[in-house]
Image (cartoon, rainbow, N blue to C red; front, side, top):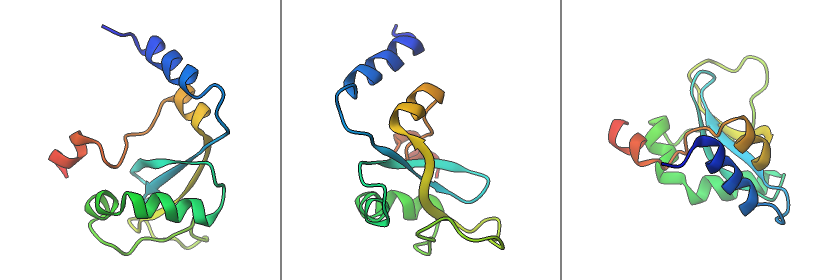
Length: 110
């Protein structure tokens, strides 16, 4: 059986000579899911991940109405948004990755 530290080391070695990628998350303020990683730290990068995983995102959120950026103060708990978490892929691996929106486990429970 592969230990967690071996799995992390393997993932870190796989991205060693790659350019930085940023974590994109789907959240409603309580729940957080990893939508993916993008090398573009811009709204185009977020849209690319959202488009690629739209069916899984819509299934989890229960609605296609999702904010495209982190909302301003006044954001209502329970409203979904997709945007950058503030972590790089490397930081995400080291700190613990969020569950991916396309995870088979989520598909059977959602």
